[in-house]
Image (tube, rainbow, N blue to C red; front, side, top):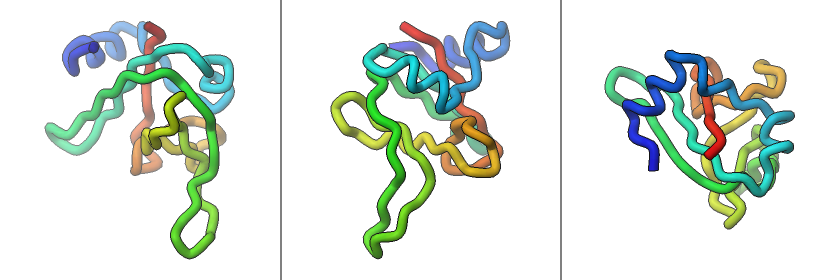
Length: 102
């Protein structure tokens, strides 16, 4: 698994790209590493095989944002907020998710 420092360096060097819905569709079935920048000291990383992109369904039955799932069905909590025009973010719509293909 890529370390937090390795992923930070990948973003800084330009090797990691912003993850979009269009790109995630092309990456389905492939393994990626992701990073998002949180509040101070709360950056997050993950590695998984890209699965489906589906809308979240809340307990009250309402649909939420598009969300990226792993190939095993785990919700990654990586969302495509409508105001970002297909760019994935973490929970906050202004914190973009970056990725590298492994």
